[in-house]
Image (cartoon, rainbow, N blue to C red):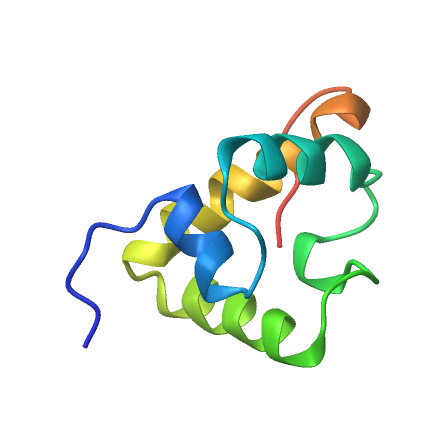
Length: 86
């Protein structure tokens, strides 16, 4: 059971990615998505990362808020109006 409040750093840990603030910033900067690419369909995720993202988003659990934050940050450069959904 996971008993810590989910954060972006812990989310990156769960995905098996470097969770340092610099690495997260670099990831977000270098993995921007266009608005027509849903977060979970990005081609840079492994199958297990994809499954982790989609399962927590669908469950709308504590991780879902972090998924939403990452989704917004990875679509920042291409946001025209409205929001991008999974």
